[in-house]
Image 1: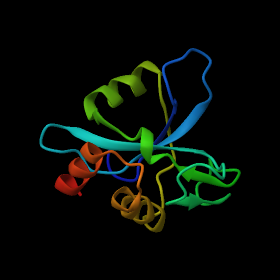
Image 2 (image 1 turned 45 degrees about the vertical axis):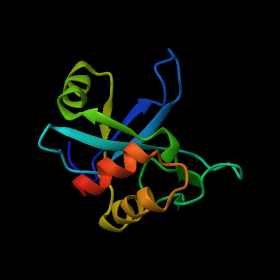
Image 3 (image 1 turned 180 degrees about the vertical axis):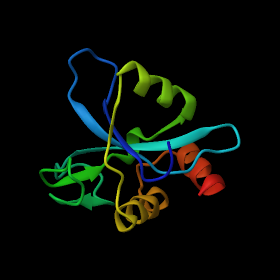
Image 4 (image 1 turned 90 degrees about the horizontal axis):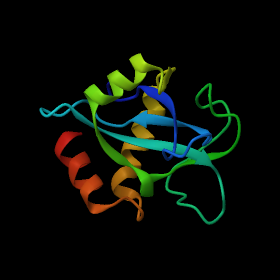
Length: 124
């Protein structure tokens, strides 16, 4: 997957967990790893670095935010395998303006871990 691609996957590996929209933030690194973030329903106590509104992506039906605290660096081949196995469901790609906003938020978010920011800055 590449920057701007999206897919549905639970936020954690708990069975029956709600499917969240995940967004691929970076293109694959030389090690074929990518940075991904998930979108969650807006709550006033959550990171408000990037807030997305209904309609900014077909899956977003209510005010939502990017959950930078739970960003992950993952093996892109494992995402492809998970898609083939039906463990994740690919969705529509982000608009350029939406992915640009999310990418800008990586460094701006006080909740993104240092390793996430470092990976992003090396592979943006």
